[in-house]
Image (cartoon, rainbow, N blue to C red; front, side, top):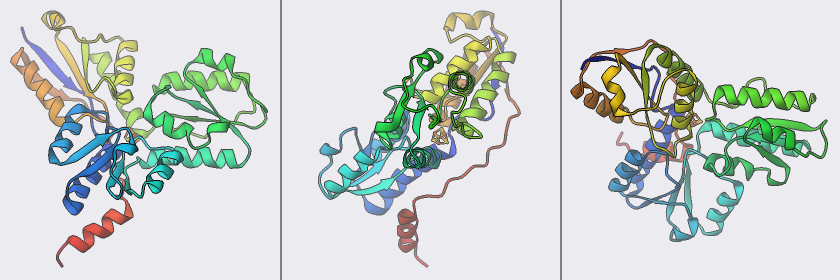
Length: 309
Ligand code: SF4
């Protein structure tokens, strides 16, 4: 059996994930163990286990964090209620919320302040969605599907706006926003939805991969929104999810990874596929991202004062 491997570009870690992991690692280095992290810093078991081994303690409940301890908020963001609870419990905090999620939070607060109701397009129960809903809880409506749009009951159609989770399917979101516009012609839609550059680029790359490969492997965690959307996009564009038996007939296999997946896991999958008969490995051309988000100011200050001059 022999087949070619095609690697999507870009794939794997985005700037928000890089930054979140760096924040926990630097906090461990500068302040020592333990560093508490609220929620999985990013949705990837490998990353979480690695940081746990270095001294991070993960929890979904701030009540478990001893008073005065250092806690890092994950890349997915938090609601103001969580921030207030941390203050009440006198916790020291570092915020690893991705700046692109913070941007959505700021928009939610601005719309709420201006008297708008907000339709949030996202997945119920996802930690990013919970954090965003918490920024204007009395003014938000969560919509997951086009069908939900028909059921929406709003107070004033003339003061309605829409925001989206950052890691949705670009195509699904477009459909939902079209349905919202059809039902509420005055709804305020941002010039560009809030789907982040990394989600958009990885979905575009997997479409190209699905077009060229017999099937596509998406390396990522089941809890990763980003990775799950890549599986959906690959399926819609003609590729199938993995079943080892399919290797037999395949001539080209595509590999990609969600924004929370380390490249070393992608390489481990490629290694396994090489052992199963992959010969040529081609990295497809794709968008050069080059995006970098600055670390929180307090961490940069601490880092400067710890660096010998
Ligand atoms: Fe930020 Fe997008 Fe990465 Fe999420 S996927 S951490 S929004 S860059």
